[in-house]
Amino acid sequence: MFGRGLKTLSLITVALIVGAFAMVFFYAPNDADQGFIQKIFYLHVPLAIVALFGFVAGGVYGIKYLRTGDRLHDLRSYVAIHLSLILAVGALVTGSIWARGSWGVWWTWDEPTLVSFLIVFLLYACYQPLRFSIEDPERQARYAAVFAIIAGAFVPLNFMAVRMAESLVHPRVLSTTGGSMPSDMRITFLVSTVAMACLFITLWKYELASKHATFRLRALKRRLADGEDAWTPNPRRSAAPTL
Amino acid sequence: MRSAVGALLRKDLLLQRRTPEAVPAMVLFSIGTFVLFHFALDEREVTGNLASGILWVTLLFAAVLGINRLFVSEREEGGFDGFLLAPVDRTSMLVAKAILLFLFLSVVEVFVLAAFTILLLGPSPWGPLPELILVLALANAGIAVIGTLVAALAIQTRARDLIVPLIALPLSVPLVIAAARACAPLLTEGGAGALEARWLAILGLYDLVFGLLAYAIFDFLLEE
Amino acid sequence: MPALPLDEAGKYVAAAYLVFLALVLIYVAIMAGRLARVERDLGEITDLLEQRTAEAEDDERETVPR
Image 1: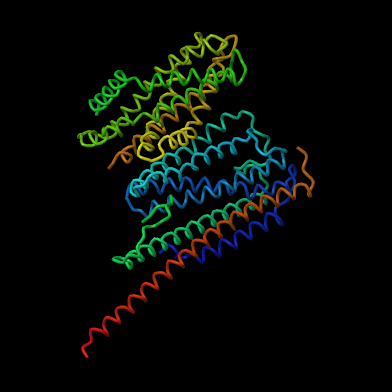
Image 2: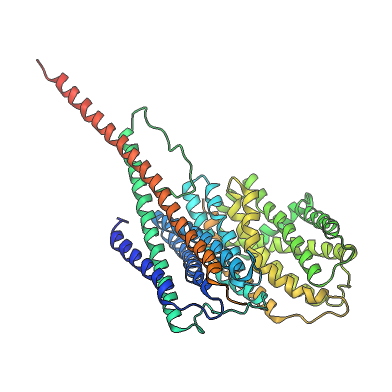
């Protein structure tokens, strides 16, 4: 059910990622100011953008869950936030490496986007502990959806507040809006972002398919083992939603 | 709805009057934090950015204490069941609790501001008092709204006292940024600087967005 | 900010891209673990099913009158 089209999607993703990385290293020119190190930009920024969109998507599925009560929406929301957290770790680490390379420090508070991203990450890092500490699965899904919606609305507000707080914005070679980027850099950046988005969607569908298959398998096992002594409740508790 | 909010508010205020629990704890905690700041920073007097930052971090941590206790009586004494059985709009609980938290914070701030002035603050805060009250009121509204949401979210979980600060602190970062930056020129030595409108705008926007959001989704936190 | 020479910058760029690669690979490893669990569950179910059919056949044989 969730696995449909996954193969095609995976192939497209592989092609796009390989293409994007090839463009990064062979097509896009070296940045006039920052030089070779600016190549991290094509990895770091798409990671961050896709993670943020994933967080917001988690909120949107949270709304859908609250409106319909369909547990699959809860699963979608959970997987989206879960994957976004992984991408966010990647964005923070690559951003830190970039900062070390070009400014000589592992962390800088002058970069509003980086700081807001850390705050958003800290907030979403509570998502799994929150789920984990609620036992009733129906309530867990409901509360997680509420959290996802609150946090989803928080993302843009937070970015606005932090950006305003930093009156001194670092002299940026590249504005992420792409206004001042040379066209070949912009195309490379766009392809990288699309590739990262495709990777996200592929992994999202992949994980959904995997989780869904596991649930059905477990349900089957329970039905088969019904009436026998061999039945044991799921020994491992997890924060993941159950169907 | 208004009568339901009024009834809930009266109940909570009565409880607070009979066994004052949250407000004294918050005030004591704040004063203790000021003493800690004095020794940790080794400063006799603070001004400007530093003063504003200390004030807001302290207030926020004190608010977390209040948020933690906000629904405890409902949970432990079965107040939720009684409320859910009553034929009233569920959002009235949100409104009542948010108003209650706002009142708590306001009362706490009266004492905390006085203590801050005596203990740590260099310049007198009486000159820019109206502006200060405006910022405090706007920030209180924001803390009250997200505090009520977070408290309702956390009250049914096993790790309530962990969840509240973990979620409330990142959520209130924009509030602290705006409030602390807005207060900084007001607490500067030698004539208060002007209040910057953009911080008030951020505070107002925050209150508005989370107010509407809380109004829309609070129902889902109470359903049994 | 003067541009870093290529050999300096190369290290950082390589590190960043390796982080990405490592993340994806860790993800694959976790999914592999899950796949192994699914396989084990599936094996248990198959065993259970075979056991049941065997029992059912035994029952049938015994109930047949001689």
